[in-house]
Image (tube, rainbow over all chains, first blue to last red; front, side, top):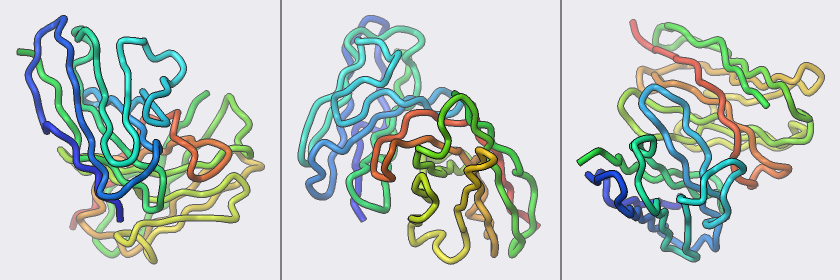
Length: 107
Length: 119
């Protein structure tokens, strides 16, 4: 199975900060990476697919990059509604696998 | 576009349960569908996938042989039949829409249904 290693597992940031979360795949997966946001008690929400394409309706403050084994999710200017847990996922090969999550908290 | 899960509940170890996901607002028969679960306080875990026509399915080793995904395109409904349930199957189970192919990205998530396996 492909392992998706996310870092950091948590971070504290202030409103207006630029935040970057990384995800490393245990083998090359081209750009078959998606990112999801989950708020407490809610279902996940799809943010990004194909490493850098925004899902419909997702604001442009979210961006993704990477190819091969290293991927990043960046939030350009953190807002109160962005405090949540973020997950990466690879969909190149079955079984699909998720990263362990990054909890973004208010500093 | 909406996915609504149901069928969760409390079940004893070794028992069975069938989850249902009712879909609306899109052409159900043209999309792959998936189940993803989340144990209390834990991350997301892939459970299964099914192709648009139901002819192809996938499972991780952790559930293979105990869980079956199937769909009824005439009813716009996805199912997850779970048997030989274990305490570690306790989780919120989400139904997720994919693309035309089972290896297309996810887009829409349901609100989830909770399964508790306990004596």
